[in-house]
Image (tube, rainbow, N blue to C red; front, side, top):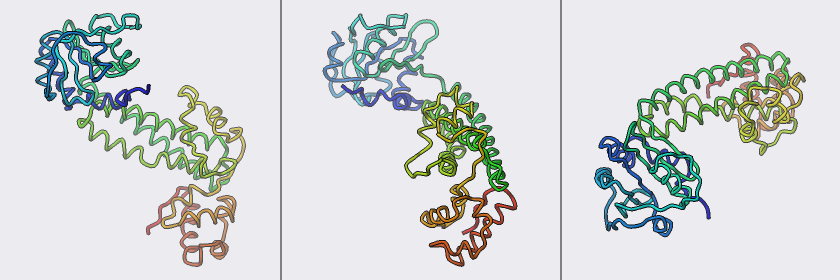
Length: 354
């Protein structure tokens, strides 16, 4: 049987983010110091591991109700969507043969329940440093305070800003080398490597933002701005240099397969992407350069690339030669020539005004 949809890590964290009913309930229980064991499930699987207690009918879930029921120091069963409280004062009886790495009785029971049923279980300790943990399947997620999450989010955002600047520098350098016709596979792999590092840090930050919920809106907006265009840059760069250009040969999934410890080695990156030896000279097709030209249809981009084969030949083409390509014409040829002249002069792609 497939795992419940709620077992998705980000979905679990999203449901327990600050401000949500489940998180508010957990915080109330922590403050009152009673502890709790809550199974978010219904049906046969919940019934199979529950004994005793009493059944509630039409008991709409609220944080305050759950906190009050937790004072009885026994288990609580809540529907998976946390809309209704089904049972209270329950004795949970999971399979004792299920392995658990937890030490306390409540947390051992929670882990076994999560593994046996496949549904989330919230466990809150009542002694010492009070901790709220969500178990689901083989995973556990400690509910961290917004203060800790904000600090982590801001730190990750600063790192993301630094990596994004380095990616921009790598892209600008690649463009200058393309204009000078001195590109090697190492320079290409360097851009793709930096793009993937930015994306991976962005995914790490996403988890923190999910944990923060609405409290992380400002960080989320800044992160989205820094990640904007990174995938497109990687794809355009790859299509510029991959040996056989293909619309379906996406680079992002291939980069995702590279282990993080190997991602810092450009030789490994180039080999994984089939680019060839890193010291080999190479030439861009012009895919990335033409993508910066406004209102230039893909069909015309493909025609230009097919006609000139390399960006260097395109850079040296006259306006008349550009106009001869299907779909270009005199007016568009002059527009392209202006763009290529500025590219040669500054060594950085320009987005011309519409």
